[in-house]
Each structure stands twice: as C-alpha cells, then as structure tokens.
Length: 176
Image (cartoon, rainbow, N blue to C red; front, side, top):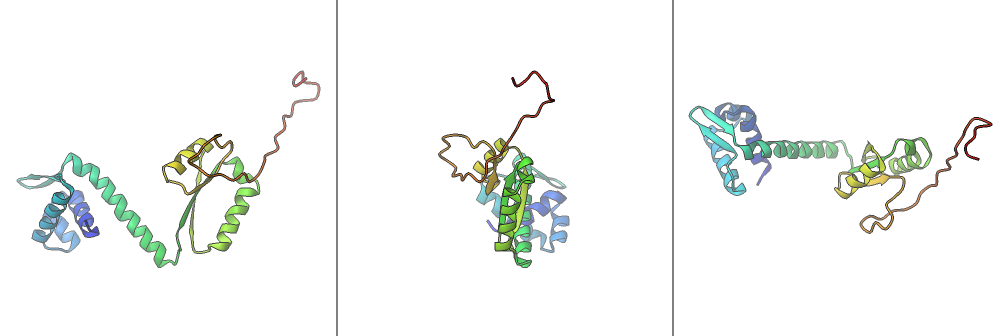
C-alpha cells in the first residue's frame, strides 16, 4: 500500500464521486478507479458500494477513512517537522501539582537545552491516566505520583519527595 492509495481513497471518500475526486486530485478518473480497486484487493474488503450515480462508503470504508485521514495527517506533520529542522518528538505526561515544583520544569528545561530542535508535547493528566497512556505508547515518559508497586513492565526513577503538612486552626480538636 502506498500513500497515494490513501490519498486517492480519502479523495473519493470525501467526494463520494469519482469524477469530482479525480479533478480534485488532478488524476485521470480511470486510473483513480483502478488504484482503488487495487487497494480493495490488497485490503481484502470493499471500501465503496458502487451506485448507478457515484459511490458510497461501505461500513468498512467509513472506518478505514478515519484511519487513512489520521495516517496522512501524521505523515504531513512528520514532513513539516523535518522541514522545520525538528529532530523528533517527546511526548511527556505530568500532573498539575507536579508542574508547580522544580523537578518537572527543570527536567523540561534541560531537555530543551540538549534537544533544541525536538518537539515537546506535554499532556496534563492524573497519574493513573498517564501510566495507561505510557503503556499504550501514547506517551513516551511521565511524571507521576505513587508509581504502582511491583510493576514489572515499566522502569521508574524516584526524582523527588513531596513534603505535605496538615494545617488546622489553632485549638482545633483534630489531630490530637
């Protein structure tokens, strides 16, 4: 499968008309139809229901259209990063209260000094949400509180310990 197959598929999927898609993509309609037939054969399922006047996305085609758009968007973003000279992307999660103290901002500052051309994507989330995102590879690294004990899938490094105190009005009955 080639990127042009995805571009052609998205064009027809959005237009639901081969003639208009061919004009939009600046290709011959017969070549476009052939490329889509080749893509369907490679995938093993029909992307379109052929109608007397045009085409309509099949159920599988509707699902595939979302993924094809996402893939083309990612390729476009990657090309733009390279064109801007960015050397890669680091996706980091953190909790809101961790961002107030020195460890997270200092770590990000040091990363930026060492990798000035890298893209840094920051995600604010709870510790549990971050760990799930790390496991599913939506994040590359996370700053969390209370790392699950005995987790053999993830490596972790203690960075800081938080000092927390309880304050109550003088003379309050608790915490005696």
